[in-house]
Image (cartoon, rainbow, N blue to C red; front, side):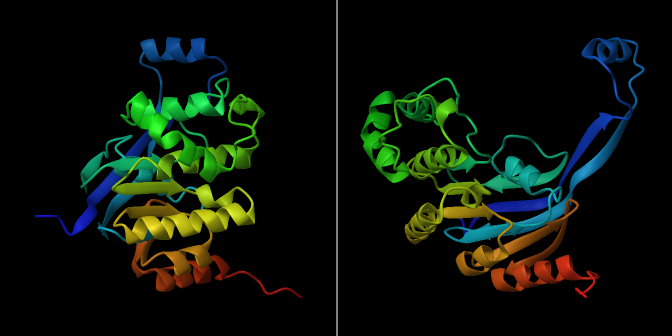
Amino acid sequence: MIPEFAVTLENVSVRYRIPAERYGTFKEFAIRWLQRRVRTQSFWALHRVSFEVYRGEVFGIIGANGAGKSTLLKVISRVMRPTEGRVRVYGRVVPLLELGAGFHPELTGRENIFLNGAILGFTRREMEAKFQRIVEFSELQDFIDAPLRTYSSGMWARLGFAVAIDTEPDILILDEILSVGDEAFQRKCVARIEELRQHGVTILLVTHNTELVASMCSRAAWLDHGRLQLVGEAAVVAQAYRESQFAGTPLPA
């Protein structure tokens, strides 16, 4: 039986511990740590977050910087374990958590495509079959044999997105990837996301663009300081988040 949900979270919390004071050098920190004199303070990056993502939907995650969005995606993609709670993920997850994650700047675009394929568990023969499609989607034919350190941020994003969408995911996680690149490429990405959705791929989309969330996503979740404020219809959640951003803001004179 195919499960109804692609992702479920039950009271998920993540607590970080950071030093309570600054250290001038790593040596000083190491000495204090060995002496057990390092004082730490903790905070909850996520606190008791619960919701479900249906199989085959585009689900938006919105919130201000520091809201816990990236931590949430890392938990779902199993990059980290929650301090408390339970996460269930059904299917193959391909995370594109940040621009150029997993890329090596000294390697060429071609070499990075095969490197990422190996990281995701594909053989060289499988990546050779995908290679031309990836290059054509990224529109980097003239630069594919140049080192990535020579690429612009938009070129990094093109290559990362092109690799991610051609790896046959059940669940695709995109963190602010549509905030870079030119407008034409962004439209191309949106069209590809819709195509993947029609083929049953579940997509988690983090973006500050509430209009994009309202137009692309069926449902969304709003996080604030690690706590879930609202989850439901994307347009309703996006509007509530926008209103919260303008609450108390003085009108221009």
